[in-house]
Image (cartoon, rainbow, N blue to C red; front, side, top):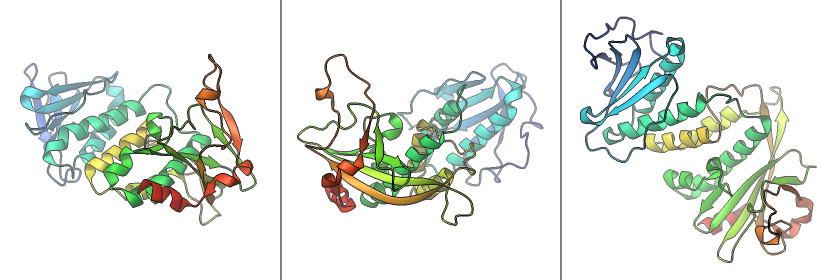
Length: 325
């Protein structure tokens, strides 16, 4: 979202009373649905942003904390007030406000508070000191998970349920879990490379009531001369088209930020091409290290599996689909 001014607070006078704010509703170029969102300025003359919410809205989490932005949830006035404390961050603060304005446009009235806090959580992660773009390996891993989400989960479940089962961004042991069916997504380079990495002795654990599958996507580096090449951002944009509900879309974007992806980062120079996808069922006899095989005191085990030794466990993708159904 863009606004016609890079300083929408410029012509807004400061208030004279302590605790009072002069406000102006965000204009239709940014706020076409006329939501109750306002540019604001208090006695301190600092840029501020006000979001009003419905009195019946409950259950929103506590707002995150920022070093240079104060956030007040004024329940008595059913409003959230964001106020910038560091004028050198005005450009970033404007982007944050525009992002919130965009996110709440199609949101139901009873979800304004929740949507605002969800976007603030995303920005709290983005502005975290020391944060940087995802590495090439991290991009590969996220692309694999997004492809599974689109091609398998979203083809079976309603969008909100498909998202709920995507637990990879939450640092869960497995990337997807639906009831007693679990899927671990792996990415590898080149058809000649048959190795995948396992991050812990718990990742391939199963019990008698669980079924666990491996979904292995081949992803190779590509150049812009390859017409089929794509970036991580291309995949994200493609997958988010699945979500019509503003809350589902916000939930998806929240998971992306948990995974370390933010649209403000530039991934256009890292391109990928997709090869063959293989699927395996992890069961008795599958080559793996599990918790029960480790002596006491041994943990955080990382190792590699050569899929060339796993042909007896390879299954068609329909096996995952049937299990999930």
